[in-house]
Image 1 (cartoon, rainbow, N blue to C red):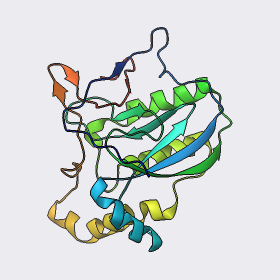
Image 2 (cartoon, rainbow, N blue to C red):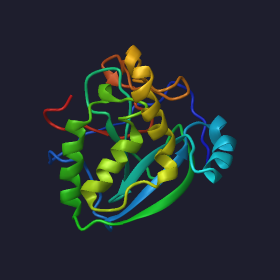
Image 3 (cartoon, rainbow, N blue to C red):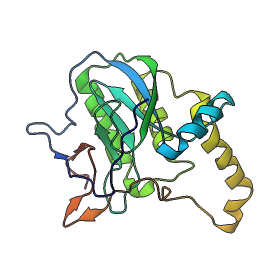
Image 4 (spheres, rainbow, N blue to C red):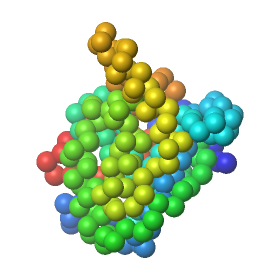
Length: 206
């Protein structure tokens, strides 16, 4: 396993396509992979046991055409969909990779799909239970025509969702922000504090 430590003050990495309205997706083989991370270094031992029982606390991202895409909480208006180097998330601890299949779409079509998702998944709509990195990756895998994430990855948020539906929601409770151990995206002097993520700006999406 690879686990990398970073402080809360991440460097800014902004990328804007020079000649296209679409995200810069590399024209590699359209194989699709799900990269699974322990959500925090402190959860690594817990997840080692929890996985054997069919659940765990994970961050996930989908690699397609050379970039790994996921969905993040954001404190300001704008898309929560962004990319990082595959298997090298700047905060979470890499655990394993699962092959989801091969998409029939070309790199241009993949870029179009991701552009659509960037518009449809604003960072301020992030919710820990029902609209998180796992639900985003399932939506992306569906559009790419490949398998979704395994049940053991999403079993815990699904159980939390069922609990909230029958108990907490009646009191108006929601998990809209990530826990303190997870970074949020916030403005810093007009720029986004994105760590080593690649944020591809799409015209019409802040």
